[in-house]
Image (tube, rainbow, N blue to C red; front, side):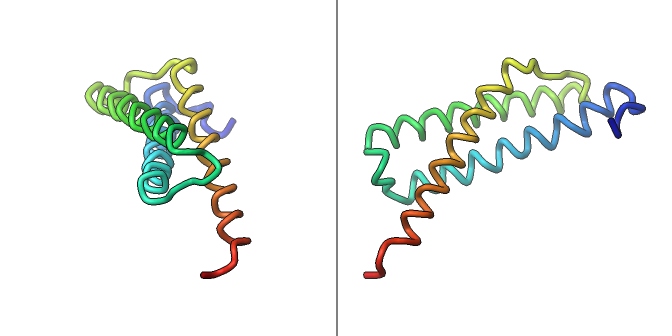
Length: 109
């Protein structure tokens, strides 16, 4: 591992901070898509549910980022907390890819 010689605190800053920023980035992009587009294959209730889950995850990630910064990067996050965020990002990617694929095959109006 390239970072194996870094002290634990530096390792957390090197890996965890960018990961949390990535979660925020992808949740924001997904939120924008869901707020501005009608995703025909989801239905209104499913789209609203996904948007609510994204909003909740963004709050959780923001809290984790604040704690991380407040402690000077000395606090890690349990993998069990990261897994649901990763799964949600993956779900969002799949929906966005399908949406864009369907948009590209739809005839222009």
